[in-house]
Image (cartoon, rainbow over all chains, first blue to last red; front, side, top):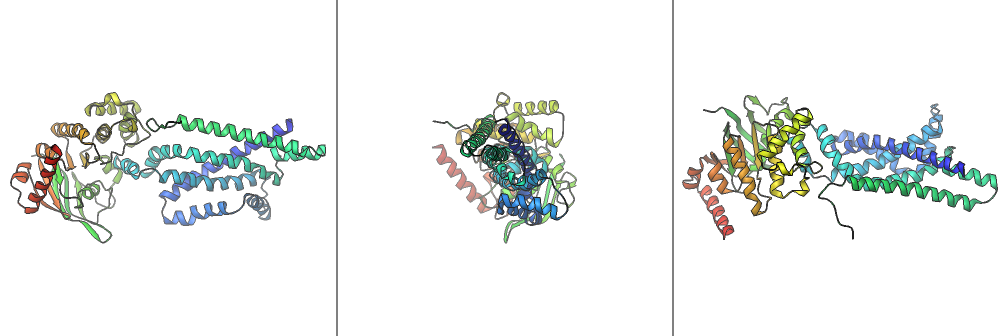
Length: 215
Length: 252
């Protein structure tokens, strides 16, 4: 049991790292896709987004891990996993943010420009605070997906929750169902708690005047 | 004689193949209120958007005092900061309170200290009679209140000129009065304004000059008395009689 908790802890760390990199790269991708010129959109943003969305996560992991050693880069499994899964999340997150940005009335940008804001300031002070609020529900989806997909990196030998489970099954000959049920419960709990937290944020930052009644 | 704030010379603007503005010339002097009237689709709103460069122009020149703002290397953000714009659909920033909406210009564009910017914002909210609503979000305000906040937002930048693009067209009839009252007061205070509007009462009592636009040109321009009593063009007379007829029906 302690080893499973250790594994769960690693899984959470991995998910946070993937989501963090995804956020850091995803936001500029979204801004580039909406506000960038054709060159930026077609030569930078879309190729990255399409590449990472079109290839299965496990294949990406192997590509980054073995591909790096082929190029004599020698990534640690963690770095390879971070790049593969983090950039993959960036691709998905960019589409979440793009959708949010595009759903904001164009009048907001016009009004910001009309008081003399530069495009960048308008994005930072007007568009983004609104887009983030709109993004939370779909972002909680991405959080759940990324957290569960950390189970795939056990293929690179990282001892996260799933691999710890395998070790226990191998050591105790049997008990497979019991161990995997516990693993499932742990994943469920982590995802559930995270989603609850995001729901809380969503409510907290909901704009007055935009409440709706729940029956 | 007051000095010239805005001068527009031979302005042309097309959308694709359709020429919307076909050579417009006019001037606005400091403290003047000009009301632009005319049938819809004649380029009134486009003209306003061209003046603060929200739309690019195809030909012609625009001067704001002695700066030619249509020059290629003109600092567009600085120019817009000194021209207020009030939109038909208010366009208040939905994630900010009334106070924050008014404060954000001084704070983020002029980069004033928060305390100083807040002081200005409160002053401007007082000016439109909404100091007590300062902590309300746009969605918690009526349309008339939102439009007044957006006027305060324009005022907060201490602009040389404010452009109003049909400021009451999106409002319920009973909310129009409060917005027009604020605008009349600004006119009295000597704020320079260009107003695109269908409110003939307002045009009659507040405008120094009325511009009648039709088909992308200025058909005639003059003080309200002249335009309403002795229009030179038949089209002006026709338009005015149609509008007053409509207003008469509304009054019933």
